[in-house]
Image (cartoon, rainbow, N blue to C red):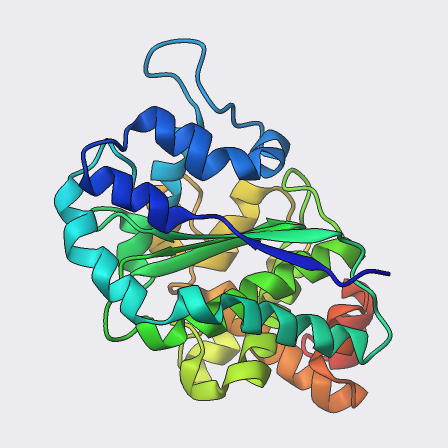
Length: 302
């Protein structure tokens, strides 16, 4: 099989146009986002709404915390130099290539011809950005990865780790896809635990994301029990309450279940760490292991 091709979407060119007053909603749609149209189609997001102010790629991007031309250009002026300074535009290829090698060493040829990477400015006003220390990502559709960043001293050194996390999602979904409509808590915590352990393996524990909380013994035991009880709950809305915690659940209109922020991410991370010890497998091998087997071998909920 030919080497998997890594394509960087030229977001810098788009932001340069915005500086010059030539960046608008249509250039956002058709220059910055159209290369990822297959991903957006899968998510049922049209490039342009049929009705004025209807749901489309601009609105969906804003919901994810991405800066769009409907927001102040001052954000681009303030944040773009710092994002460039982070080095991620030079380092993205090394991150993905290193990740590909981890799987090829284990005999897994990732069944994709290419991966599109879109490195985007986040929106300073977005709650999504605020709760995640100014950065987030999406790698849920194989072949497409987005990073959204409002650069700061905390996240600039973590962007390679974040990209590795989203790359792991891409690989995991080629092995064990799931449907947002019927995903279980169990599947979701395994997915996120695998991705963060993979990022940690590649770039070190000191650069893991803020979504892995440092729970004390009492909160860890309590959170494990709540998630154990609800781990077969299905559907993205239901599952989100377990993953993101009560505050986010309430803001998004989900029923809270009594958990702290990002509890599902934290429990998933520790579950995978236990699985790796019990199985003696690498994180790449674990990524290619069914959820059911990971839960059983980890004995995390026993």
